Image 1 (cartoon, one colour):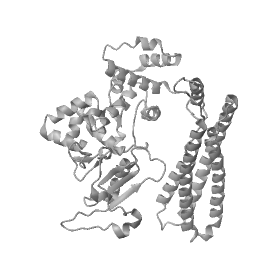
Image 2 (cartoon, one colour):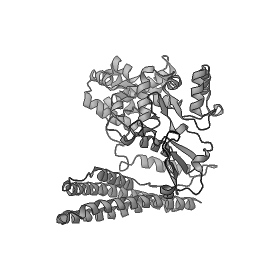
Image 3 (cartoon, one colour):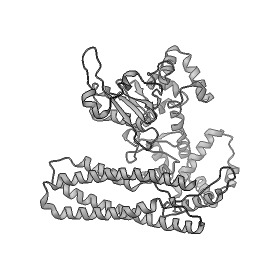
Image 4 (tube, one colour):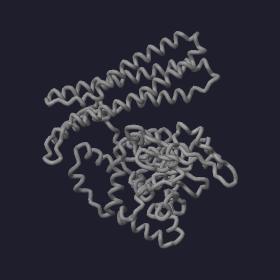
Length: 483
């Protein structure tokens, strides 16, 4: 049974990898074609690029071989562990060589495009970078162990294998590395603030201190000697301004560079979150805020993205719904958002309703939390500044008939079928069907896609903002968009 499961996983992963590989190769060929047709004089650069791509391909072959080596299960534990160790080293070496080769290809591509300033090459270059990164960061299976959920057989071996992987510095470069005490002091102070908020002022940490490891005792001593009252107060808040943290940290000898480095480390560990402009989800609106207690983000989002039925939510959310419905206007807004009465009206969130949903949070934090949800593409603004659409809350019920008929309609026939009518009595509208062919998309993919499409500059005008107004869920794997 284990071998059958691994074979299915192996087949699916290889299919996904092949799809990325084909897309990458097609884009590279298109990129070179546009340059090569008018750049025959750069024969030396083209030869260098092709050699670099051949080297890239060779290293990819090695990576592909070791990435799924654990799919070939063996009964001998010692042989299996040795194979894992060898595969890890081969994988790390392949990663390192691919990274070097990627930089060499990018350098040659920059030289090639510099000779053609008449064309915008940045979209090509950025797309190539992302596809290469996706190709290298392919799914991997480092070990496989059979475990019985009934008897627990094999569980101990799995625990030992996971512990060994977690301690392997080839996979996790920061394991065993020295961390400045100031970084750990900030982390400890946020932990103390979390405990204070959860258990109150009478929280006794003496039992916890007695169980700490030796290195944790060193951190405790450092915190006792160096932490100021102001820094403790800042770290104990849900979220604070970056300036407030920098000023409080300055009192204990941390300059702005130290604070920035500490935030990068703590963000990676999840202890503190800072979505600055150098982060994947970061932007200028979030640059000035530090979430000292990441739980505040969960507390905000769980009231917005939730189950619509009262029978599927906890008592806390249910009580909030009751309070909101005590006002007829707010109750109607809540019912519309949840889709309680309107089959296709769910997902529309007003700013006033949001204030009620977040009444338990500090009002001063509402703006930055809203910006965070925008950055995570969990909602998007509609035509006015007081209304938002939350794609995850769109209706999961049957679609209007005009969105799923005629049956013979397909995107490939859009030119003959998707006729746009525009006059005083008809709203401009076109239907697009999205169907996932094989595999699975990440959770929330289409919700994020809709927000992304509507955030493009081409849709910034009030007229264009109406485009791609909704993407409806029809059934698993099939979505319909109204534009």
